[in-house]
Length: 263
Length: 309
Image (cartoon, rainbow over all chains, first blue to last red; front, side, top):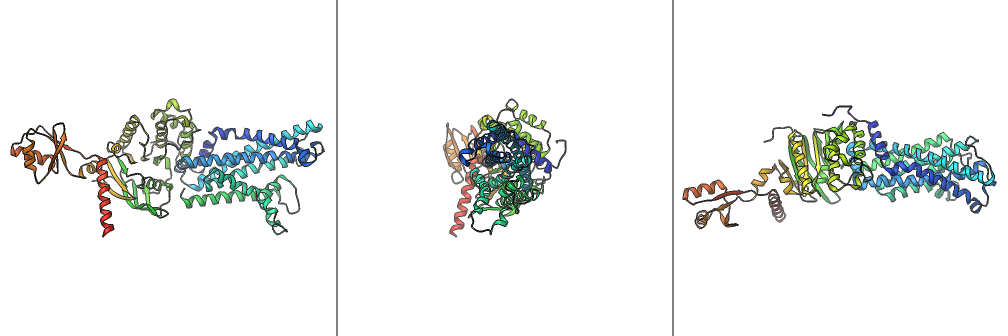
């Protein structure tokens, strides 16, 4: 008979999920990959700004340079989406998800632990991408006109850290979508659907959807980061609550779906 | 007669997928201290039953309990039940040790158990190798190590002999016998009747989701089909004449004949009484595979009779 503590609870489920994720080389390298992709995409957009927007980096305000750099975080978000979807789909196809359910038979507990691990890992990836994208923007700015962007300048930290939020958020949504769809394409496409939803709804003529748009994840991320603040933009804290509610809703639907399906 | 309290109890378990009833009002119990084989052809419903037992599938109706509790309500599942389901389950990119360690964390089991078990299953040298580089037999051993992590009293194995070489089969067989001898409940599904014959003490035979036999393995081998006895005698013609009407005699190879329809003691007594010289008298045991096929055939005939009625 084994000695030691018994009755594993949520803490044990969380430790197991973290251990399972971080023992794979893909997951361990994800922050590095996100940092590289974030910096590369930020540099690419800034260096081609004159061609694509008609204005050079030297003509941009410091905040515009940082805001453009944060497109690197968008790219890192796609990296995390694909990574999360591939890991979840692989577990489902090999049967490892069944082993995980044997270890933590409470489906809700296991899914909640997975979601927290994805959110935590996503935050690390987002920070790596955000800071490297900011660094790339700063380097391009210095090389363009010698202006050095300061992280402590007004609004800069909020833009960088606010943008970072989208990585754990969309990572968690990808977990839920892949759990439901049971495939990598299904998980990624479902998340991308939510990603582009504000853009699609913005095409609807008239202002009937204006009240809804700000509660969509894309707009909420913008509100947290302080992009294009207007009178109807949510307060950053309220926007964070909206994002958390979306994430919980997606994970909740995935839980109900798996319970109904039996796996 | 079974005197122990059943550990696994399945009560009117039913599961359908679309129009197909895969498990049909299944009732059985599994007792500790012996290896219980869960036999059936592919598609008979063994895996679905095991998945429902382990809380991985929801039954449409009925219950499956371990120690009186549904699997998902077990307070300490890994220390209560060990399961071996799919050798391909461990992620190919994870090392054998890491695979066992995350399970240890899930069950609050000391991490040292991972290395202990890898040593026990003969994979100590391969502990830091990625599972993707393992052979099927090695993966099966990783699965068995995972099954034993929590030192559970109940063991559920789904087709553990699939794809194993003869050495691997012998190793698994010895392990299961050893675990049962320690008083644990060992419940093993297989479609390899010949292999289970040497492993199981008791068998449950499933056909199209229904239980068609629940009896000691020996009884299944012995009790199904017609008695056969191998006889070597210089007076075969006399023997044939003596048993006429009660049994038939057919060539048995290597100078022997096979008497079909009489048990060995009765045949021996008859030969002794009539002064027929016998050089060999060997009861021929029906193999589990043969018994299984006979049982299936009987059920098939029964089903057809009911259909025609």
